[in-house]
Amino acid sequence: MRSLLLLIVLLFIVGCGGPPRANAVLTEAREAHTIAVNDSMIVENAPVALQEATEALRRAVAAWEDKESTDLVEHHAYIARQRVRIAEETARQNAARKEVEQLRNERQQVVLEARAAEAEAAQRRAEAERERAETARAEAEAALARAQQLSEQVTELEAELTRRGLVLTLGDVLFDTGQATLKPGARRTVDALVTFLNENPERNVLIEGFTDSVGGAEFNLGLSQRRADAVRTALVERGIPGTRIRTRGYGQEYPVASNATAAGRQQNRRVEIVISDPQGTIPDRTP
Amino acid sequence: MKRLLSLPGLLLLALFAAGCTSSRVPPPDLSGPRAAIADADQAGAAADAPLELRNARLKLEQAQSAINRGDHERARIFAEQAQVDAKYAEARARSVRAQMAVDELREGIRVLREEIERSRQGAR
Image (cartoon, rainbow over all chains, first blue to last red):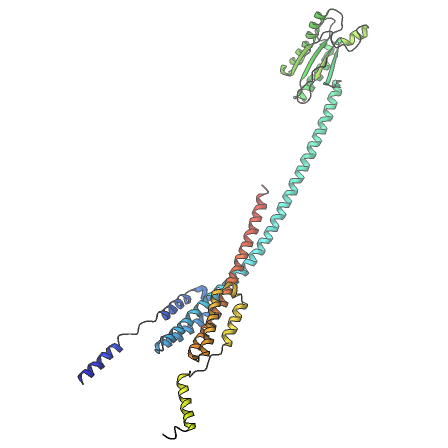
């Protein structure tokens, strides 16, 4: 009888060994559910799915409290856990849908912005094109005016356009006979040349002196050089830098008329002023 | 005792014995889980939630096997799980697709913004 009583007591102790151990699957389901319920994103976006998850969890807890089999409790806990997942995914889907709506509106705005920017860019391009055309036109006009001005100046100078450039000829009458002094009559031509050189600072001059065949080659060479230098001096006195002026005496060489006649000889007695091209170059005289 | 061993008696006994070994609950209706799997498939789960869809299908097979061997209780459990797994696969597929739509739109907007910036920069 005593041993039987002891057995009963032992069985009782073993049977009631404290509260039942928690089921891991159920605990996991509970924890996942708690997190979901406290996630405002899920609460806002999937309230129905969340409610279903809560109900599934209740069934699982009830099964456990009713001491149903572990298999059954874990089955219900599994269902609850999946329901929580469904609530999460449903919430994500709905949140994404809302975002798609917003993004569609945003894109519309940006498309309008893109169009406006493109219109602006096109306008700017047209503006730039107009400016370029305007500049080109102005430049062409300026070039034309310049050419006209030059033409007038050349006419003014009474210069002749030759292979070597513009050539101004100072005749014999502008010098005293056998002398290298420039007479006052030359002033007009010299002034015209000074004006021309001031208005065309990129051009230089080469002053070449010539004589007729009378008087001896050596004398004539010297005279022709001195005459050329006299013209140079006249230009320098009027402010033209000496660096822009070269002189050369050719004496009897390069006659332009026959030395047999007086008229011819007078023609040969001359000073030629060659004006360079806009780059400052004067081609050499060909022999 | 003699009565029990007669033909109707034996029949009664056989029925009683059969009742003890087969399930007392009816087998589950598998049309629910099947429909849920079809829905998930329709929602694109094969591409966007393949593992989840596969789980649902496996459990459906296990439910059928359980029915075939007369274990209706187990079959009910598998059927219920197959259905919830299918619903999960569907929800996942839908959320994945919705997220792809978001990503696509974001990318589109980014590209547009870059173009705007480029055409503004080109002006300088």
